[in-house]
Image 1 (cartoon, rainbow, N blue to C red):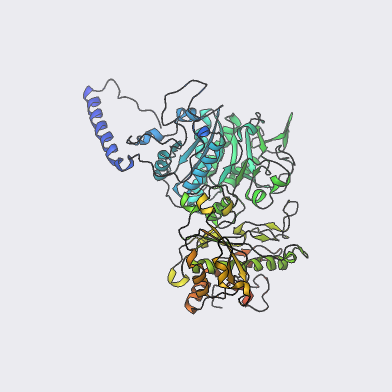
Image 2: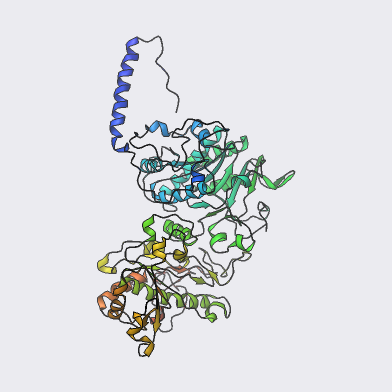
Length: 622
């Protein structure tokens, strides 16, 4: 905004007086409107505060103590109680605000709306735990702005006036967020600071600033969607061999003239055409003039205008959702990852959140780790032959997954009956999942077979989280990620409230109910137990937090009430998705079926026609 200027000195004095009176009324009205925005009783932190060492990294600049302000206040330190919320203008992005937070001439920035509050808090927490406090968060709505300010997170107003709901990929809101990012980069670069711009759906695992400082001549360092390694150490990717798109979820800008020109051209291009995806436009610009190595800096390449020096961050340690969660590339190459970005995933934002939870990288509210009804887990039983024998084909992949689905189906039924939260088991796959036809595993990647696959490869995580109508789908069944019981955030009182459950043959002497009186001994459960048997056996243990079943194979005989069974079936049939995709077919995907075993001769075949192309639970009039 242009600075306010006083009235011309040649105008009558009463004009200045009149302006002052009007200004006073405006300020009073502003404070009145913000009265509901002024209470600074901070809500409970949804994540534990960062370590004292990280939290106490104060706003001292160049070794000189500075007066504490909202700009340099230590992160996670909330504002004083009963202090009024600062006026909106205090949250405008300025050079002074950035300077108060920057360290070593660099600033780390992300942005989002209120729908991504938990992602943003997780993003900030990881950085502060690493000792990085040179960060700022752009708020796209006033609700997020207030929440972050009250939690002691340095925040500025992007002026977006955006809705607070989730931005679905490809939606107008999604594209608006992309344009806001480009506008933000153009606003920040003139301030003269190095800019590490990040999406909120990624986390930092290691301080990236020393790595980025290794390449001082680079105008821009970008992450990519590269899934085939071009290097085996921690150097930049060999740009000559990079075939994946440059990914703008993590990239580092230096405030050089070529970088500023690129940012402006990128902005102008996006503003000229609402249909352009910001990442595609960025890639097009980068390849306008591309291919000449920088003399003396072979890892950098001239791009864009032939003067911008570009480097591609290694996908093995600045990981995508594929190189981290599927390939485990950093682990195989014995490298330390710096970051993981939840790309190459399914089930939308819910899938991203679940991926990070599976890797124990997401920080949830304390209530997430202590479900009122307690938890139910089980040790999956998978024959070696299903995992390792024979070729890795569509048939052997579905045989492996289906065997696991049947056990998970039983576990969901028992969890529903006992009103417990199911801790999902690790899920094994033989074939990768993509959105296009492929041979099972992408050639040249480091994906091993079989591999521990993310839950969203098979399950519709976002559907499992929905509040489906109870009248049609029965009670909601809550669930947790497979790593939940190993998470350091799990309270001690939950972890230690644990009971083993062993399956036994109903008519055996060992399965006698007298065994259950032995303190510390496992509870014995007859195979194919009825609902009443399950309720009777576990009623005395309703206060035990974790029931750990030795197996789910034939653990439950099924619901006796046909209406209850129908509702349960309606629910869990929708829990599974599809595998994609068979090569060289117009319709190449294959739907998973939670009740595959009830269909004699079931085979994993793709739909033959578009009419047949629907989930098995969906009835379509042919």
